[in-house]
Image (cartoon, rainbow, N blue to C red):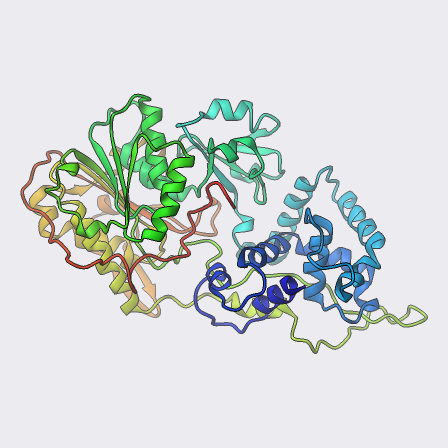
Amino acid sequence: MSLYYEAASFLTAPAGAGGSFKSRVYSAKGLKVSPAQIYAVITEASKWDLLLKEVIENSEILSQEPKLTPLLSVLLVHDFLFSKNGISAPPSHPLRQAIDRHKTRIKGEFTKARVRRGCASVQDLQAAVLQEKKSVLGSDALSETSYPRWVRINNLKSDLDSQLRSTFAGFQQVSSLADLKSANSVYVDEHVPDLVALASGGDISSSSAYQKGEIILQDKASCFPAYLLLGDQDVAWTGDLVDGCAAPGNKTTHLASLLCARNSHTDATIFSMDASADRSKTLQKMVSVAGADKLVSVLAGQDFLAVNHADPRFKNVTGLLLDPSCSGSGIIGRDDMPRLVLPELVTKSKDNFARGKKRKRTDGDDAQSAASARRSEPSPPSKDRLSRLANLQARIVEHALGFPAATRVTYSTCSIYILENELVVSRVLSSKVAMTGGWRLMRRDEQPRGLRKWKHRGIRQQEIALESFEVDLSEEQLDSCIRCWPGDDQGTGGFFVAGFVRDQPGADVAAPMSSTNSLNGEDGYDDDEDEWNGFSD
């Protein structure tokens, strides 16, 4: 039963604990069960909590089992109904017995709840419950479970038409994200090639295509940098590529997929590097499973800022993709905890007339109230923290502009803050290496067809912690920057990407070299970056 007690302890932890929910779980010390189990039971229960509340209240188990708390009942009943292995506890444990004594009633109430919603399958039922939760609590009350499930087709192993005929053969193709209301619906994206969306909560991890690496789970926004860099398939691409801050590998494998879609016999090399040796292991795994080994050369533990522009390996590098460490403020689910709606505690008198009387809550397990307090708008990082990140980000982009054959560079962050986005772009454009090398922003009319249609563009001003920041960019330059905002109807997290181009390579001026491993340490990589969703959830 340690699983449920430890999961409950995370949900009732005091507000203000540092880091994201996922990072706090995975970095916790002294746990008796694996962090993955704890994280899974909490996130999965949060998808079903409205229905679990209904089932628990209608079966009246809380009034008959004093050892159960509302929070524990949600976690236990979730696993009883939905976990393949059932409740993770021996049959002799009192809490397991508290559920087992009412299992017939619980199953009956679950069936009634499904019938009331007119759902023929569990998948359709989950989609219906998530829609209910969104309407009851509002879109800001949901974590990543309320967003579409974005799936990128890996052209190294398959193509969109093949996947629509196989993996998604039984799915109904809809014309908009708003129409993704059932588990068997699929939307083909209009902005990024070979990208589809499934309804929130959709699970394809058991599909053959997922296991083989033919399809990859990747947020739509994080597909923008590679597509912006390489452009449309009918535009020729020559030269090698560098992914300078590559782990866990989604963007590297996207580059490889786009090259393959353009020309299955390409001789380009993608140099994929990451300053962290440990993260490089994840990078290599993803490259291998995606079938990108022939295109990608993984430089494990290589600090991009320590790369010498004169290294012969990089003489033909014409494009670079940079997604450096950032505040992560745009990541969906970055806030503390999922909000769980809990069943009411009621007492039951002998004559059944006291059902509505609430039992006093004394165990501190009202996770809904605790989560509500934590759901207030998170405080932004300090100005000093954002400035340090911006300094590192600008240095990385300026270093990329110094590659002698480079003609295109994309810079992206999963941040919503102007200090890490438009202000970094402005700083880079005014740098010596940019001005001497003839670098400018890729105009909107030069961007790939799908991205030209994207409506959210750069902003000129933003207030952060009561301080106003303004950027000195022209309207055309702001229109060249691409933004995504979490919580809107586009189904993405917060993101920013801009492309730098020059018409003629060969300038002699290079950005200053760094003698230190600047991509590690306080302003280095964020270990709970959200991209590794590829092949093993």
